[in-house]
Image (cartoon, rainbow over all chains, first blue to last red):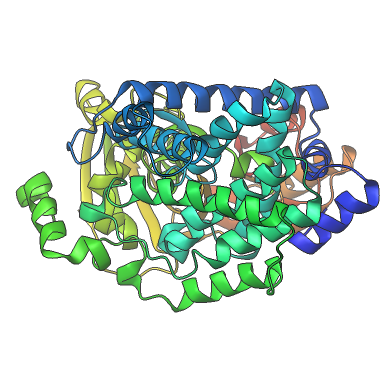
Amino acid sequence: MFRNVAELVELAESKNVKIAEIMILQEMEFSGLSREQIIEKMDRNLTVMEQAVERGLKGVQSVTGLTGGDAVLLQNYMKTGKALAGNLLLDAVSKAVATNEVNAAMGMICATPTAGSAGVVPGTLFAVKEKLNPTRAEMIEFLFTSAAFGFVVANNASISGAAGGCQAEVGSASGMAAAAIVELAGGTPSQAAEAMAITLKNMLGLVCDPVAGLVEVPCVKRNAMGASNAITAADMALAGITSRIPCDEVIDAMYKIGLTMPSALRETAEGGLAATPTGRRLAKEIFGSYKQ
Amino acid sequence: MKYRSAFDIIGPVMVGPSSSHTAGAARIGRVARTLFGKQPNKAIISLYGSFAKTYRGHGTDVAVVGGILDFDTDDERIPSSLTIAREAGMEVTFTIEDTVMDHPNTVKIRLFDEDKELELVGISIGGGTIEITELNTFKLKLSGENPAILVVHNDVFGIISSVSTVLANHEINIGHMEVSRKEKGQMALMVIEVDQKIKLEIMKELEELENVSQVIKMVD
């Protein structure tokens, strides 16, 4: 059983296995299920992720009309060849957006680690898939590696926007994705931890300020930025760049920031973008007299 | 450790848009429904903190009601649960509370039918993971760190011994236990935290004990 990232890395390195393997072994011990059963369970989650991306890329609209269709816009833009960023990056961004647009439309998704942050892990996975051509088993491992890092954050800090702000939601998701990308790309366990640290450091202080209390604005675009952040940090870690602040200390800092954040900035729709004139107008238009 | 499984992090598969405000809320509603034992004909749902502020946008209202209708987090009927409840003859009332609770995502659910009622307070701690903090005004001091079960039983002598004997026979060690009753001889509750995972057959064996009316997994 690992309690923090340092122990997780140590376990993987001492056994000379991937981080994914440590998570699978722990899950077997915890649940009493066989390896095959656990892999099959994660395979189902992967299928839900694939279906959500597929659905989002065809174009969905939320009931409020605030979000939807942006994944399609981005995919079309990529086809023009005029995109400034590389296609892999934009593909990840559009697939993250696709997932969150489906989520906002109350469609079926797999929370990773939460629903509001459900786009980052699958978005980056399906984008890097085009380049790294992983097997189905490796894609499932990607999810277990993400889970291992998310597990540490959830138990030592928080993955809830209401408790820790968006840094705890999209921040965690991005760190999880960055670490898993590193492992899928052949990086070491400690490089995965560096990627997680670099990502999370750059999302510290991110507030949770959903307009009208919906999981739409800015949540969908935050997932887009989380996905690009994850890919950038993964590349940095694979290049040999390290974080001066160890991963566990970054997670601890994130938690402390969350605790000191005013409640107006923690999923109450009372501060930040939700409290802008336009944010308030949208809330009124959507909920009218219903809104408190 | 509040989160114990990889699937607490990657999962649940659910209807959007929020794991804490939709999936977690549905799970709390479903625990209330399970404890009640059947579909109630009246539900009063009180929302606190972030739940109170954002429930419409997050679908917390439809999710809690979906849970009370016994829907799982990935049931595509959740968005239309209010209509389904109405058609099923279940009266639903929401109250928005100002009281500041210990956790920002808190809901109190009261369920009624002709002959009984139940009150439950639950919190949604993120990623779809929940804790039940109060049942029929009895505070449940669950750390959430160990597997826990709730045994609903009649307040008669020897019942605690029968329950613990079953656990002992299966080599399950009790880490923490609380017993509470409303009135002498009436319905009582045992909350038992154990070190090992409790298998389905043990749950069944406990349920078959005389004077035990229900056994529910609180933390898996």
